[in-house]
Every structure is written in structure tokens, then in C-alpha cells.
Amino acid sequence: METDDVRIVAIGTALWLVALIATLVFHDRLADNDNGDWVWIALAGSFLGFVGLRHVRRRQRPRAAAPPPADESDA
Image 1 (cartoon, one colour):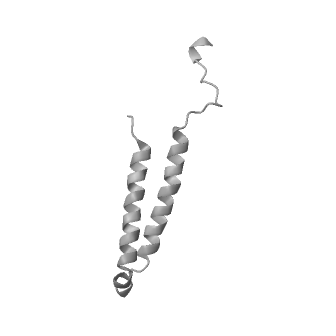
Image 2 (tube, rainbow, N blue to C red):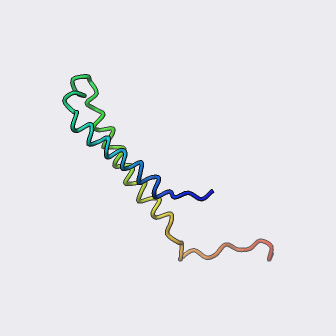
Image 3 (cartoon, rainbow, N blue to C red):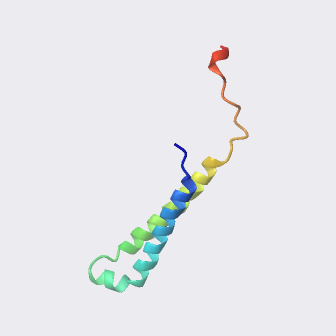
């Protein structure tokens, strides 16, 4: 099944960034309810999303240096 991994990871990262902005806006209210660490969770999700985005972009690049796979039927 062919999927667009870059788009999927980009959407997930964007959602983490929205969550980060929301937690920063409502930080005082979250801290009052002992949920102040949600900011750090959203920050970590955003960071890992950017790492994942870089990873899937690297995987999509053609591997020019790698030799083509050997056809086993020739052996």
C-alpha cells in the first residue's frame, strides 16, 4: 500500500504545534489543575514530530549510492 508518509507526519506535527500553542495560552489554568506539565508533553511531541519529518524525508530520497538488488533467478 502506497502512503504519503511526509504528509502524515507533517499533519501530526502540526497538531502537536497547535496543542503546544493551546497549552501555552491556557498554562495558568492548567497549572491550577496540576496539569502544567502538558506544555512539556506538547513540546516533546512537536520536537519528535520534526525529527520524524526529517526521517521520512530522508527515507524517500532515492538511494543513488546503493547498487541495484541482484536478481536471484540469474544464479
